[in-house]
Length: 306
Image 1 (cartoon, one colour):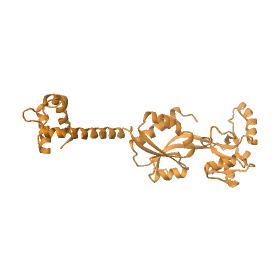
Image 2: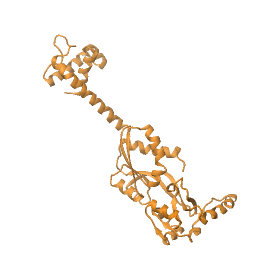
Image 3: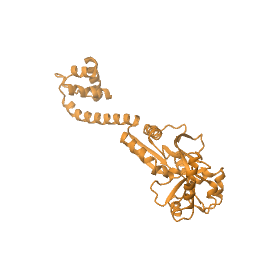
Image 4: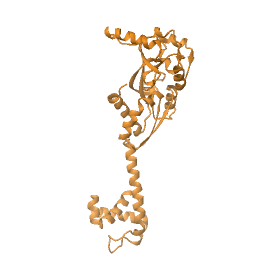
């Protein structure tokens, strides 16, 4: 029993005869009749009355609703699989560092979901090491973050944003006044504005996971003399708000509506965290994940402003 034979059977019923069904199917009447005969042979009984080939037999009457139901399920399955293959349906798992979950991803997901409303997205936030481990373990399809700790042979990395590193402190901190006083003169002379690492040396420093970006630069001395080491971003901001020290953070990791703290650009050394989207190398991803990857790259390139 073949799908095409079942389609021909339903066509004969819908069109009211073999000739009309054959024209609709773009087949000769002899070919369509042969298809129906093969189906009847497989089932063991005739589907149409011998005297009037357009009239269903008693057996055909029983078969009609069952075949109609089966073909509807088959059609739905075919359309669903085609949608999945086209990347219009499915499920994707994305791991991201928290700063991108709060800043970058909401705008990307809002536009993506308008275009692909039938794709389910599972979003997992983790630190940069956790994001990488989840990707390499196959727990997620795609990851968003920085890749300086990843073996380049294991991943396929596409850059999205160069995220500048700055200093975070209370708005009342003396560093804010120092920067404001220097800004006018620096701009007048045509220089970029920002703090130098030497201005931070007398301040209590709070080490966080992103401070590893200071390594192998003159500013790594700040890490060596850190008074506090904090891994959780909530704890980090609590210490900062209580005036227990300063820290360095990528701009994307700093909340845009923070009332008590300020992010100040670090000029010397001028550092950036390269943010990108990455997948496992030499490993195919689902069509849905492919569309998200492409959409994310194109959206950030064209529409996202840091």
